[in-house]
Length: 390
Image (cartoon, rainbow, N blue to C red; front, side):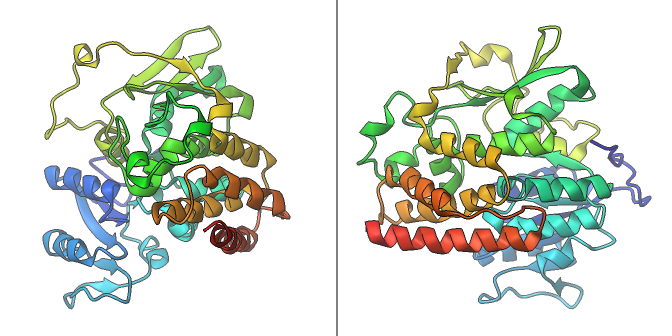
């Protein structure tokens, strides 16, 4: 990691950070705005971008008065003469933007992330897929530019906070996983699982796709790939264990055998706030300060990889590299949506992914065009296979 702008004085000399939020109406975006609302002296909303939830976006625009706005052009959101409608890829390039919060889902954050990197912007990101599908390409960009990466997703954020400047002394990292709602059931017994059952996550409140990915442990596979590129850690130094309480978000083991862990309640408020305020910490206002006594007993269990075929596929695709991770994320998005629409069974999801990955002819992942082409091919092929299962 490189050094980051000071909270109270940005590199531009401005007394507060100008924030661009992509995905402002989603869970991460809404929580980001809650924090900005509580600390108006520190943060200013420069841009807001959303998709279909234009009613909420309209209310956000009225409250925070951003200079830049983006939304699905099929809908209408009234803007003032001082506000401009511009694409996300242009919004992140504004010379007035100090921090870009990428809280979108799927591949939507990829092009804005690339543009922000090219403009040397500081980037807080909760959108796993761009780094999963284009890790090698993004690594190249990071080496050429000076922007700072601030992980928002709780597990990578925990690794980042535990590591600080101790990367050279790392032995391995351990990412925790709740195991989802079916932790104690073998995969073979899940054929008749309904979307409603899969969406009942035991500890987290998240969007529909990530909740299903959590039940499959696909999201954990994404986090392993993300950590590989984010921290430049070799595959054999990234472990995953089951931790049903979701209190320990990640652990770092050092070469002397000591272990550092980050513990906090299972919500995104703390990692979002730390990404916004870094390198300082701001007090929690809307919630009580964590009391370890409230955590109770914490359990850790080994991960049976055979019980989570999507996790196994993700790790294999990540290690294969090239355009396999791009195919993985795209195929997963289509397969999960097909399940949510009751078009395929829960157990069909890994079957679809395995078939699409097996059919894929990989190309180099050092070209943005090859990554996007692989993404589109995987979406089309997965949809074709899903229709055959229907």
